[in-house]
Length: 580
Image (cartoon, rainbow, N blue to C red):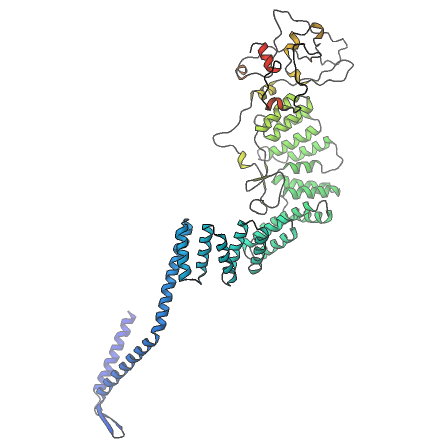
């Protein structure tokens, strides 16, 4: 609207000027030497306008002729640049969906039309990488590293190619050069930090970490945690070489990361050696509440040197009580309690601690139960059954990082080089699926665990005798075929009895004794078991009983894991004689 008003005002002023010129009387005379021109004012104004228009037209024509070559060159450049941009765009799209032939064709077009474009160089390098032409890709990346605008991108490409070629030395040199150019480069700092940690250069890794904090790559909380991890790694390495530096490092680490398990364990060890028992216990308790771990329980139990096993058991009970039963880490407290109870020969307390997890045990639970059976009753059969059950039991938490399982804590993941990657958790491969992959116990395990534990047999005037493994299932051949004087007398466990042990009465021929077999078939598991007979220890081998091969394998698990040989004696002979 404003433009229309201004246009109308200009038209009105022009009309008023033209009317004023037309109303002026008189003539305009121009005299130059002998030349004299006389005209009216309106005519002179009209001729002046025509002359000005002609001058402007001639100037425009001359300017256009002068500028035409430059405009032609610029138009060719713009057209060529447009073709290059088109080739770069479609070439990058071809690389995105993996069309190597189309990407190479667009890369050649981009190199012809836009040889100096950084994106053309990038397209050429990536198309060479896609086709596996590493030499050409390295050549292009070197050309990019020599340019000012693409130097960092070229170094990144050379770093990736060095990693693909397993050239760790070249890769770390390229990353260090990139850090000099740009301290805020995330990939370079991550690579140099990982390489220095892999070499055990903890001081250099701490310097990189400080540089990352100054460049704003990490926040304050992450910096404190990662610095605590690096200090802990340095303290663990220097524990046996320079204990003073190790102590200073772990003290600072436990201040920065109080929940870091290895830092708390090592710091508690140093404090215990310095007779700072309360301080050591506080360090372990702080880490235990955040992340229950068996190393913490062991450090808490041995925080005071020279304590007896029962004193350590009481201390572990205090630590285990700090985690409620509904918390996930409650099982670690019970496992630590069972371990301490076994060391203190409190087997009933150890069984009570493991009772909630016996029905569906983990590997550590099954191994502890095997140790209890072996230590309390000397029952190698039940211990063997629990050990075999541990093979198929669920896995316990371990140190894992990026799918890698380690038997100890490490500061850096060996897969990705990520700092503080190891976590105390159950491996993903051992987690149960939705369909349920629980392996049922074998008949051997069920039979061995269902059998009552054997008692320690004592003869008057002699030391206690541990029952032999064969007492779990006595050989019937030794009872039926041996002469009366060769049969073993029954030994009782009554220590107070002073009467001599009498041999067991010989059974009648019509009603032979029925033995309760420990190893039963699957068909027999559903049937009621026959009445058991007292277990005896055979003293003399029956003439027709080959018994057990004395020169057989010494491994106690060979009988269950390996395939039994077909022979006249053993369990197959036992079942054949009973008609099974």
